[in-house]
Structures are given as C-alpha cells and as structure tokens.
Image (cartoon, rainbow over all chains, first blue to last red; front, side):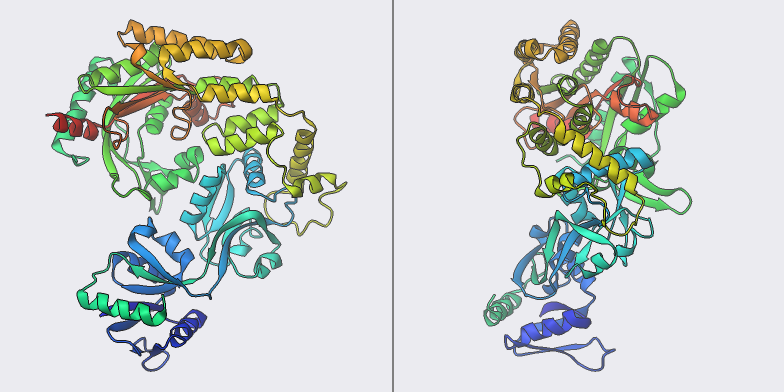
Length: 229
Length: 368
C-alpha cells in the first residue's frame, strides 16, 4: 500500500480533501473529529494517514510516507538536500505564504539586504551583540543571508508570535511566514524589498527513499494519471 | 575510504604529533565541549551550519569542537609565553548540511606558533614542519596572502567608512564585489535610497518606535549615507588594480614579480609584497622549492575567516575530489578578536596549520 500523509486538521486538510475530490478521489475521516482513522475512495492501493503538517517532511525524508501534502517551506527547512530525498509532484494552488525578512517601519534607512548588513555592523559595534533575527526557519534564513553576504546577525528561535519579538526587545528583526502582511503591519514591521526568502504553497510530494514495491509503483502510476500530475 | 577514526588514521595522527614534538611543540589537550558563545561571537550564524550545538542546563549552549584553533589560542593567551609552540591531535566535529558524503567526525593533528619577532620565519616553519610530515605523498601546495588584499584596501583613496566596509567583507567575495562596484559609482543606487536622502526629515512619521535600535542610530546611519553619497567614487584605475591583484594565479616567484609591478602603481601594498618576498626567502632557506608553490591571490577568501596573512593548503595530486590534506596560515585577526583588541592594533602574532590523518592514510592505501 502507498501511504499518503495529509495534514490532520484545519483549512489545510479541508483544502487538500477538496483538491483530491476535484480529481475524483475522496479522502475523508472515518469517524468523529477525534478519530484519526481515514478512508480513501476512487483509487486502489492508497492508504490515508492523517498527521501534523510539521511532521510530514520528516516522514517523507525517512521513507515512512510514500506521498505527502505539506508546505514547501516546511520541506525545504526540515529536509537537507531535499532534492535527493523528495520530489515535487504538484503545486496545489492553496496554502500560499511568503517567508520574508521584516524590520521595524521606523528603520527608514533599511530597505534592502545591503542596508540590513550595514545596520547590523553598526548595531553590533554600538550594542556589543549581533543584530538578532527571530525565526523558526533557521536553515532557510541562514542560507539566504549567507548567500547574500549579510554578516553580524544572529538567529534567535521563535516558535510563535514572532511578530511580537521586536516590541518585546528579544529580537531586532524577524523572518516569518506571511500571506497578506497584515500582522506584520499591525506590529509596526515592514518587509525588505529584496527580503523574500521563499514563496511557499501546499505541495504534493513523493518520497524517493520510501520502499516502492511493484504494486506500489502501479498504484502510483494510476494515481498520477487520475490526478493529472 | 578510510573511516575517520580508523587505526590507520590514528597511527598517522600519532606519527605527526611525534614529529611536531620533535620540532619543539608542547602537546596540549582541549575539551571536546566548547562554550558556544565564544564561537558564535567570532563566526556568527555560519558556525551553526558547521558545528554541532548541544545544551547543558547549567553551562548553556555548548558546541562539539569544530576545530582546535580557538581553544588552543585561548589557552595560549591565558598562559602567555613568547614564542610558544603547541601541538595537538584529536577529533573535530562538523555538521554536513549539504554534502552528506563528508564525515561529521574526523581527526586533526596540528601545530601552532604564537609570538616571536620573525613573521616570515614563523610562517616558513609552520609550512615546513607540515609539509615535511607529509613528505613522499606527492602533494601539491597552494599558497596565498590575505595581507595583500587587506593592504590594497587600506591604501585606497576613499573614506574610512568605505575601507572599513570593504575590509569587513574581504571573506565574502560576492558582497565585497557589490560594495566595490557601488563605491566606484557602478552599482545601481537603490531607488528608495535617493528618495530617502532627499527628505529633510526622513524620520518624520516613520512608524512606531519599537525595538532596541533607536532613532539616534537610524539618524547616524542616514548621516553616514549622506556622507557616502557626497564622497567621490573610487576611481576605475584603483578598482582595476584591485581586480588585477586578486586574479593573480602563478608559480610563487612569477606572482612576486607581478605583485612588484602592481606595487609601483599601488605603493600601499609595498610592505606586504616585501613580506611575501621575505617569506619565500625563508621557505627557500628551509629547503622548500618555492617555484613549485602555486600562488593564488584569492586563496582562503571564502573558507578561512580571520586568516589575514599567509595561507596555504596541501592537496593530493590527481585527487581533486579530496579536501585539502593540510591547511594553515596566519590568523592574527583571530587572536585580536579573542582579546577584544580594536582593529588596527597589534594582537598576538599567530600562525598554525592542521593535517587530516584520515586523508593521509587514504592516500597511502591508494598508492600502496
């Protein structure tokens, strides 16, 4: 059986169910809201597993799942060398959000990464510590800033309410997911003009390292045909 | 491939360590768990990508030793002694986020020399001791000198602020290039910047005052941007000389005569060029065939932050897949940063190098 991992709750689950339904495959929960057992109709050889969206990248990378639906930001952040372990089958057109670098609106002198780098150098000389950027996307942010040649910053971990860290003075800037930018603006922050790290959306992934039997390959081919991917 | 901690690699490490002792170095040990704050302060986030981080409830964040240089330099600075020679052997640990075929744990055996009054002699000694230890393996040597590019930047006819910005990014060539182009009037000035500098009070109605970076700091940066906008561009001729310098790749004696030609138009690099001449003479005195050394002016610019003078690497000929078997160089900037000495002031002179015994064992097995 092919194991297909899908987020277990919220809009991401509903939108995923809708996406499959539009392609003639019914995914649904078997019982009550508390029961994570699930049913697949309209295709043979596929088993549905409901999981936390954050755990799907890890399970695809280990081969525990054959297929999975989750945000591309999570896969890129959690799976090093993701191209060797997972393959993108389809961008699903929902769950869109941008991972961006944002700084206080007050910083009228900082509009680009080049400005951020210069501000970080002066900040470090003045305050005796590096300019702190709060995020939960450590790898993506670090690789992005490294590639841009930004120095004198430090990443601090923030697993939620990241927009509030500047006001709380536990960080000077943030790198976080935003869809409309509304929460950023409400918290006195603005996005750097070249601060888009990754434009994420819900994506159907195939694991390259899962155990694919001949029957699984046939079921996969039939599934792809039906999904048109 | 020989495993990183194999008996053959351990034998190589022991053999090199013994040679280093015979060369006058005192063996030192360092702990495997290093406080993360010192390394983070020196290297920033880049070190998190390279080193394993762990936590202790009392000591806080710790890192598994990513190399010996920092703890050995700290031990020397605490103990003093001039000159002082140290040797060591042990495991270092590196996270591999990109190339999973590289080992996360391997042996290093190294030799470090602090102090002294003869920099060229110290550099020749480190290079000589390491290459002697690897004699018979047919290694190719590449050398460079970060002191040349640093001297060339200091000698530019431009503002101190621009020189400081360029020096800060010597080890990040892409950002360095962007800065140099902009200071030369070549890179496009971002649209927002011109508008900002045109405002009489840029902070008027800017937004809520949040965070630790205050209005005065923002005003100070705007003043610096105005000053920079008013400063004349770095002339094309100066930038072309810098480009010519960093592009030099030639056998060391040819590179030296090329550098002397450049020094006619760029006298600021004169002392650094003569320091290189002294070094080649000292290497020659030790019996090193300097005409076989490949000089690359940009060697060490992407990998060896804080190495600010002579740098070198020894490579297995015919094995471009292998990392360098040995690397080293001068890192006065590191001892300066560790001591908190302001830039421009002298720190403890420091030069050293490390060998990868696992790679040595692999080459011996291959050629057997």
